[in-house]
View: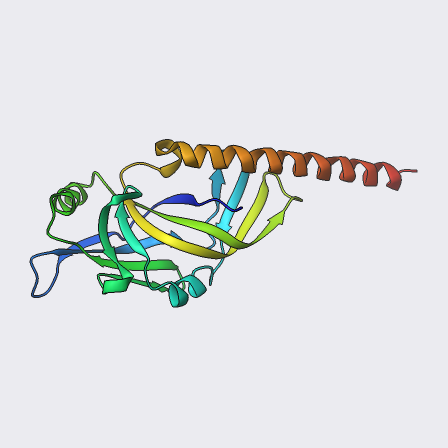
Length: 194
């Protein structure tokens, strides 16, 4: 059974602004960037392919925006129209209209100061491709089941045990595959010289 994982990205275009005709604020930015290589615990690299979120956005009408992947800190959701998601050429673009809550007001203040400027997303990969001919191995995520996007204060892998457990499972499998590919390549190379 596939487990949920999270990815965190530094973002440069995260923006806060006052919403029109509202006491709340709006945050916009990119929860994920396409074709941006990320190292996963120094065991493999990963990229998100364009189109990876298209099905999830069109089929899942209840994706949430959270603070720090905490389901108690809901900032918005697609079901009620306070979270808008779309793919563009750069990645998974979002805009969330924040509630008038202590958490949201504190988040806006921290973002204005520049203390918080990262985003993340929680997902299960549904279609992926592995390239073991490069070191480290490269996983390309072609499609995901998207559950949430998060504005985060620190990267998800340093924050949750569940992500570390998932990483260890992936790392062991990836290490075995890389070892096998190396052995095959050594045999092929040896056969060339005979």
